[in-house]
Length: 133
Image (cartoon, rainbow, N blue to C red; front, side):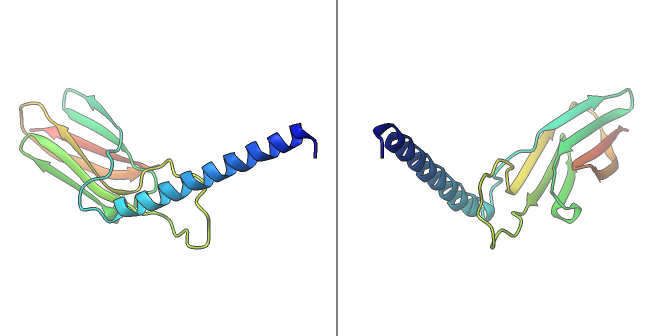
């Protein structure tokens, strides 16, 4: 085997071993996070204020409605839930970029009184409207 081909082969093998180690590392630590009582991640949000209240969009692709809890407390709104890892018992995880496990997002509200108007999951986003009262 020419020296150049041997170097290319060794480099490809080394990269494959590093990729496999990275996948195992992610799989091992993701599973520990899945069973944690503390939030593992925070979903991104957009907040819009109108004359009558707020509209809040929380990105939650793959989260089932029954795994969500929305709570309006004195001066903040809390969204709490869990994104479950899909059944991958017969698959090798090649990449995990979407966070899984327990999440929580707390949104501080300005002074005033609010009530939840609507709360619906649409196209992977939780849409909440808060009315000023």
